[in-house]
Image 1 (cartoon, one colour):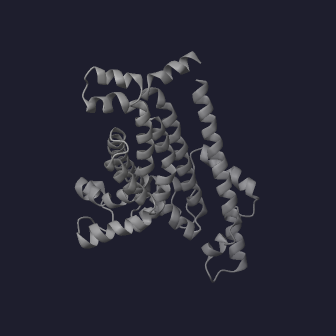
Image 2: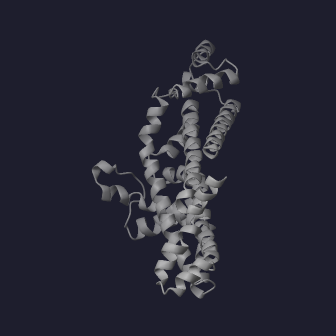
Length: 317
């Protein structure tokens, strides 16, 4: 119980710090949102009226406290331009981002686990060195550059997948997934390498343990030893990195969504920054922060499910 309460306190502190820092940084921008809303032909009195209406004349701490109080009541505010509720706008864009992140993580895990197992079983072989070379080559390419390469070959040359655009799932799952393959691969082909390397190293250590030698002595097939006995206790570092990679996935999604014209939260955040729609930016940052620390909390809680030894150590402590 102390473990979960400590993690929950850490979650609250991180969310509070990130949102406060974002609020202060937005306030330091030289642009005047009141002038943008009033338009070029507005008078000084019009601008002053807008500032008073939006509460921009109040100190930063007062405005942040007012915004935080609204968040605690479930009110994230309204867009300065469309007057759409921020929570409603994020909810409408959320399914696209979630689908992109889930597919990217799925592709990354499939590549990392399959290649990591083979590399650990055939450590220091030619195949292992080949996988290592390919991985280091891919991780050195930014996701947006890799996306352009994928678009060139698979969209322009082979015409297998669309270069841009989004098809809602209601119009058909195959068409929907077809538009997400290249964006998800653009992120996954960069993220899978570190997952594969840590899994490979941990599995090499696990394969030298006594219980693995006992399984080999019993004559168990190699696939069963690798998948049933060696994989689970070797996943701790990789699962931890999966949680830490959420930030990388979200950061990549902001760029990839704009590159492939996907109407997700990342695209909403970037367009709100350019439009100086501060309530929308603050709401998107809050959502991303809560998602990041929430996933890391679930990763920590999953350790006991992966290895019974963790549950025993926790009960003894």
